[in-house]
Image 1 (cartoon, rainbow, N blue to C red):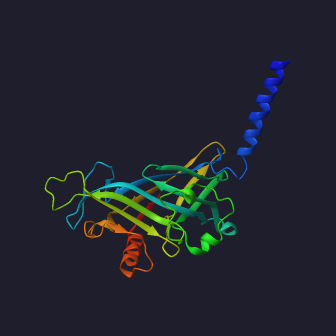
Image 2: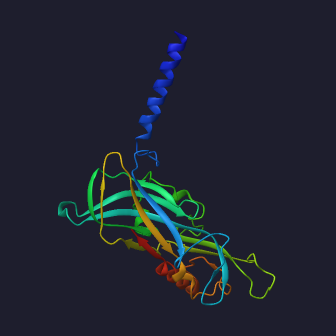
Length: 252
């Protein structure tokens, strides 16, 4: 009897845990069937931590981390006027060089024809209207949380530049870090028309090609190794806006 009671307790516990996972309180539901797959690029080259990149200013540098805050993932149907725009997911996700793939939404089975899009960054209106228990990991990410009272970073890029004054420097002795964001810096992206279908047992993979070359190709990293999106510093803030505007993301 004791063994039967123990077995019953285990079964009940497993069922209870499974039912809890189906609530909106859990940000990692197993039923998610839409996955984002991200590649970080410098032009037509992949970015690797040990690869030296060179820009038009003659800067030689390494990228050690890229991270951005993705939210407001939506789909616009082109063949269903009655469902013109559908918000796929209300979560906030940290996409980074350490997290290139991420399940982000639950889609209904069926055929899809249209455009998808999202926003990078969290403006003041979106912050004020965020869900009480938002899905995703971005709003607790230490790199994305700002310490100036202006919300979250939209984009963070870290790396090391090789010191041009030091002929022995091959590792990159000049650290750089760009924290781009706050309440007033964000950018929206939208795909070209896509067609795909989804069954009850399949998954959909959407591809993001994130290219930072437009940010850095004509930017002197050595002369300006730090940007913090300081709204009280016009020069710093203008550079932050330029960096956000220059971020190229291909959606496929």
